[in-house]
Amino acid sequence: MWVVPAAIVFLAAAVLAAKALRDAPAIASFIAQYPGQTELPAGAPVGLPWWLGWQHFLNMLFLLLIIRSGLEVRNTKRPAAYWIRGSAGLIRTKGTPNRISLSLWFHLSIDALWVLNGIVFYVIVFATGHWMRIIPVSWDVFPNAVSVGIQYLSLNWPTENGWVNYNALQLLSYFMIVFIAAPLAIITGLRMSPAWPKGTKRLNAIYPVQAARAIHFPLMLVFVAFIITHVALVMATGALRNLNHMYASREDGTWWGFGIFAASVVVMTGAWFAASPIVLRAIAARTGSVTR
Image 1 (cartoon, helix red, strand yellow):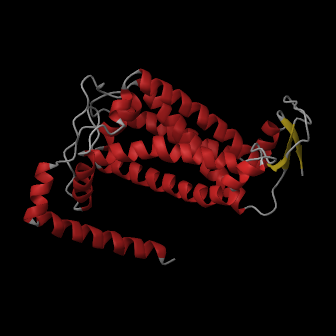
Image 2 (spheres, rainbow, N blue to C red):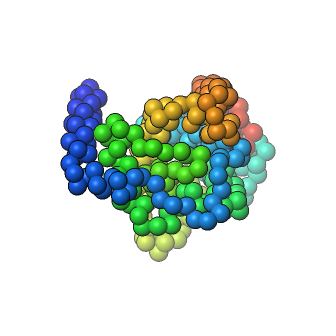
């Protein structure tokens, strides 16, 4: 119960410190020199295309279900059911079947969809040049990110326009999530999954499962922290315009983006409640045998 009050006190202290820091002449000069954005390479695309909106929605949906199912795998002592591959249903495989919990089957299935969505994103983002908007190309991104952090904490928002160019802190955050955290989550998750070859002693010694477990759960906390911060800043820095950028591919203040966002929340809420054992059993039974 003490975590929330402690977080509020810490945040209030950080805001007061940032306000005092920002009033210092040296810091004011620093912010003037590094206002918060780095210059994009020549030919960088402007705007957020429709495919990015779909990618954003699918990524959000899959991450929500991955976090839910991952927590169930971590915390459930007696699974509601088990899934055995290849012994029944649509998928037939050779060898000794793996018996895993229904929660783990759901977690791995959503993982596969998330990875597929990520591969599509990688291909499109490099094919269209949009990589220039989320990969740092200049070292001044770091002092600009510090400047943005001070401006955010002091509650004096930096001047920005995500339609044209993300601020440096956004740029580093997106780069970290897309190109560092996501691949690490996949690599560590693969090591912990039943698909990992158990007979490769040398490989297992080099990459022990304990190391993967020590990284995988903290990565989930990183994703949760990013999602909370991302949603909070989207809503606090011009919700209608930001949601239009992300969901409607529009640079205006209409309600289209908000409407699409609201519909996506309804879909995600429905998916959350639909991911119950009775529904999962029916789906899993088409890819294997489900037993108690």
